[in-house]
Length: 457
Ligand code: GLC
Image (cartoon, rainbow, N blue to C red; front, side, top):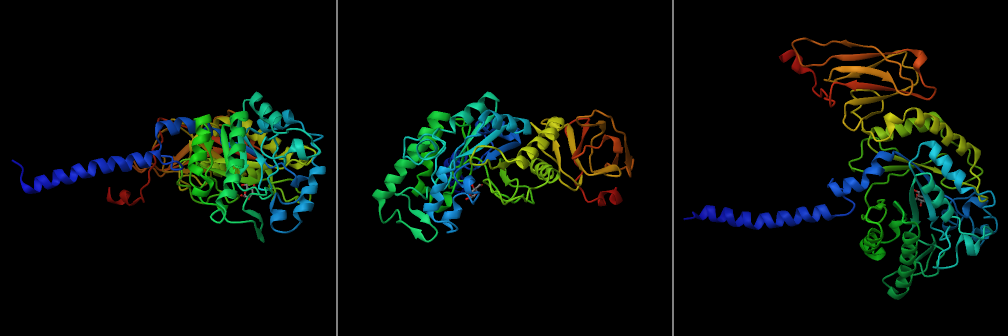
């Protein structure tokens, strides 16, 4: 016999369980919200381990040295004059193998190149339209394919940047800031012509290069429904189920893409990548010498990996295909540092909260080695707080010198772990940033209390 309240409970539960399952299933299948399921984790693994990528903005804008696409969109130059840069886009000193080698030397594990920016100029020989490096520029050849080949030969992952907006294409909606051609709702047929064109290009890129990563841009100009974003995502995954898509496909991507601004607090997304310029421009601008210093770049990079992200650092080659000297020097300098400290960078996970160490940190995957990034000269010692583990050994990464440490303030009757001082002599310091490895007796355990436990003990 069932009592009325029991019956109700069963009925409610019967109703609740299937809907809970449906919600769960829905959440799991939602793109753009990495739910940590094992398939996603597997697919994202190389990306998570890579830490550093090199972004390349190469296009017509490098010829005059002006803002990529935005210069005509914002009216700094007419569209006609902008297009004249095709004559200067010679690629005559372009050495795709040297590009890939430099990227590899920097320590980066992947590269993302602008196959087509908002101006619509394609670096590859597209069957869709004539506005590309082969058919419309002095280079007279496909300049994308040899670079993709060179990346693969160097064992680097291939990322393709693709702008959804195409401001030069006659059937796209936007042309310049002050002139819009039409609205999709007013002329669905015309919009369809554009959809066919851009999705055709994507299919072509996907079949030709089978990218490991897609870097979309400009999704803000239309809604997910207008772009047909879910269909596009599916099309790319049908071609390569392991391909990774950035967030700029109106919510249908796999990872977040903060731009230029280093997140101050740790992003909530499981996967994220900060894209950043070396100076203040994405493409080559001969008037922009405002480069970040190598120390600043290493500082930003270690902050990023300390918070579990990747850094996608941008270079802008010239119209002749050569890489500006300052950019080459920065990547080479970065390479010396990443090579020396690779064990603390690649394949690690996000570090510990800043209260425990006033600087960036990472952890080995099993969380038994804590890596400390020490900026400048710490004047003899650095401080670690609230580490419950026993420290088995400390050494200088890339150098091997063992360091001694001292525990201060440990109270024998309390579980408060005390403060650890690590002695860092001047002669082990790296010219850019020193890295220490702290081997613990097991997975790291943090003391996160406010200390009042000591009085109440
Ligand atoms: C912005 C700009 C674009 C640049 C991109 C890089 O979306 O529109 O010019 O290529 O950021 O992240």
